[in-house]
Image 1 (tube, rainbow, N blue to C red):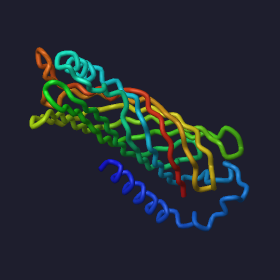
Image 2 (tube, helix red, strand yellow):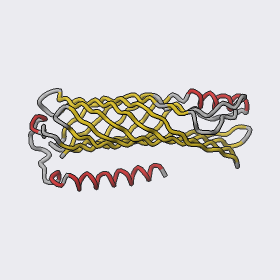
Image 3 (cartoon, rainbow, N blue to C red):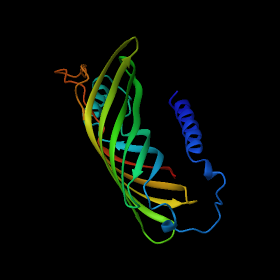
Image 4 (tube, one colour):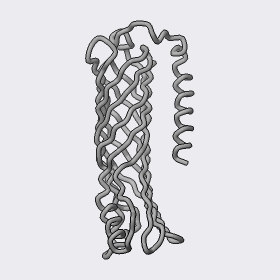
Length: 234
């Protein structure tokens, strides 16, 4: 289901980008140009990236370890998450930009124990306020980009075992820092790759781990991420 959602999202993003930048189709992608020849007056940029994160999940993995030890389980700990982000940046000049963004990422694990089949899954949606810095390395097509974003995130947690399940929602503020390198394919389109660090933790889902003492569910999404995508300007 998530892969189908990504395919629909990518198709929709491509249509929107082509609609917003109709002169791209007529651009000569092989013509020589330099970064300084691109727009240095105020303009818009839209970025879409797919990402993979290495997340902390310390409390959740302690819970999984306890199930494996107490109930003879074979459940894999949660170490990574997959996701994507979309951002719209208004470039005040060639260096500074301000914008908004949206990101979504998810993680899950499953396995069996003496109590039956176990599954844990979580996803998070975030709205971002972004400050962006764009700096050409040379007069040619390569540039470096840095972003700092403050986000408001809504997360979901679900745990199931055979016919039993529990689910909860929470929200929290987070910080996202990212650095990346872009290569301009045309004056309008760049390929982007990079990574960064996200700080985000939630512990108010209203449900509890079934550990001795029944501590509240805590999802620590903090960690490093890396990815790549496309940047379109007009």
